[in-house]
Length: 443
Length: 191
Image (cartoon, rainbow over all chains, first blue to last red; front, top):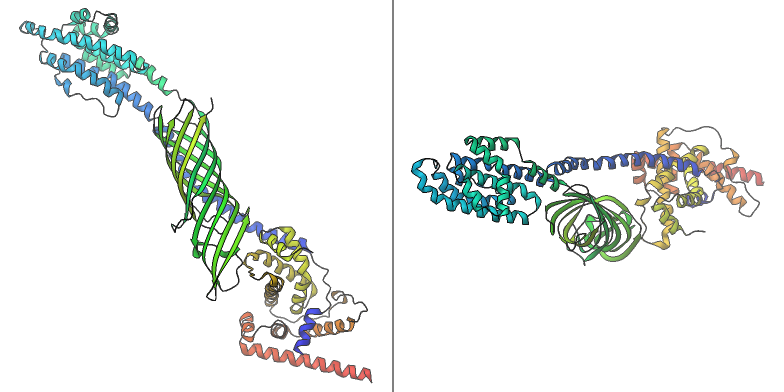
């Protein structure tokens, strides 16, 4: 009887024409739609943390990126300010020698270094600050060579200034004014003019005539220079800083190549992979740029079975995946923000960070699994399996060297950390390696 | 006819064409399974459609290591989903018996081949099973036709093993009565 009913269940004549795929499709879409909506919303929220990067970008752009400008403005202020203690020294205060240049500004340091060479005799002069008294007339003879030294220094300083960039002109101008003011106060103005007879030195004296005149009018140099200092940088200094402020936004392209070592949860590594591609970089601030590109990448990896999502394997029940070794070929799309933390004309040090997307072209796995204590090996190959958008976080530090005005070469070790599982096996692949790139900027 | 394996590969990546092919190919089989449990034909088709949605949604959990037995394993897997969906539907209706006969259009139109008599018998047998009260019907279908154990039936239906056995025994008894009655009627007719 049982067998009869079984056969009847299999072969009974039922009208099966009523299939309605559209209905199924509708239900399927409805459910997919509901779930995918939720997933999309989740995905949207997942990247909200990127908003936290915005203030960093702002801070970098506002302050860090303009460090040089700020420093220059300060330097210019500093360059005009030393006139205050110097002149003060020559008039009343002997403490000039204690005035030190700001350590954080090399340009100022070099200038004030010269000042110090001048101010050492100036210090002698300061000890004879009451040089106008008759008792110190003899000592004026001692001061004469000082004046000569000052004049010579002024000439050499002038030559130095000529050899430097225009932005330093204001600095030397202020310095010379200070020196002359000091000498003038000591009553050696004529000596200075006489000994600095050369055209350059004369010019210097003329330049500083206003200061000299002021000092002659009543030794109020201190007050005047103080006023000058309060008024901020001299027009020349401002002009200089304006010139340095001129930043040009640049667009450059690079050819990138490098080795790649991939690991999953820091297990043993497989053979070395590679990256090859191009990037485009847009420098929109003095130290900050954004770069994006496309790289063809091959990653080799190995993992224990526990990290592999075995859903795609379709293994028979009671199977346990032991290991998986494989490789993947993909297109990587990195989007990074780069910050040049140390830059000169010839070389640049930079750090970069951002996110990468992996578009899988090919995945190949050699799976070792056990079933009832019997080991098996099976190979799985997939093409165009997944697209993992923004699944990887990039971090790199690099050194860039200029080969010519528009061509640079750079080397950048990098780390790529997974934000979620990648590929059909949802593996958390971390990578490290070194990028070598040759870049050229557009005009 | 397209290879089942390639259709399944398509279903794995949610390819709707492949899903449609799979649905159309196995709709009849699925309906035959479900119709044994669900009395009303229209309801049975709805249950089948619901079950197929479940099938496609959980397709990635389908595992088959032996390609030569792919269809067998696939049909077994799909059948389990169909049965579960049908039982869920019966539970929703509190296993209440339904009244009214089965209209003719639910049966396949018979040709006059040699198998016609056999098909008629099968149709009668299934109709008898469908006429059982739902709890007996489910126990009978699960145990006798689909090969579940009493333990599994008890777990599936949320009843005790004893109840399952009792339901099956009563189902058998009723069917035997029907069959005996039919045999007697046939004997009378043959005289």
